[in-house]
Image 1 (cartoon, rainbow, N blue to C red):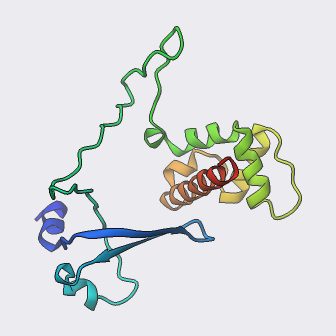
Image 2: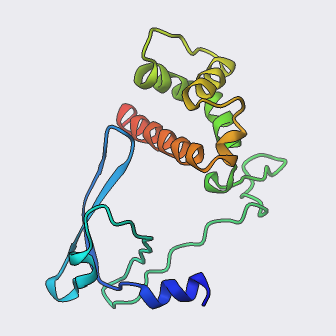
Image 3: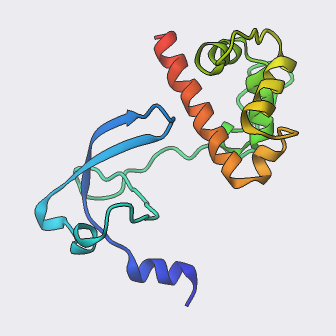
Length: 173
């Protein structure tokens, strides 16, 4: 039996409605869903707190069918012409964490976020190299490449980048 077969065999299917979303101080996100009593599976109600689940969500419309979203562009597809030489653009989620971190380190707003939210001692982070040095120290790594090779560091990078996006949305709203 393949892992996919095992997942299908043991899956819990229910309809839920998102009713709350918040970000914790640690950077983790908390999503709350409301499930009608008839849809609640006893495997969920009887599982001890802390039980881990792989979760797959599919948005459904009023017709009970999955909502079709526009497919995001593949990394090798060209972006619409924004410059005369038609620059190819890669989706952020398809980039390696080291590349994402490099882009963020060059971003003045990201450096301001690091100083405001994560610099525990007065420290100016005014240029990309200072930001890169900060990230190496913050994550306990020798190179930003490790953000893509160490799963834990990759998750922590994603959390930090999500914190930055939330900070930026509030600061520039």
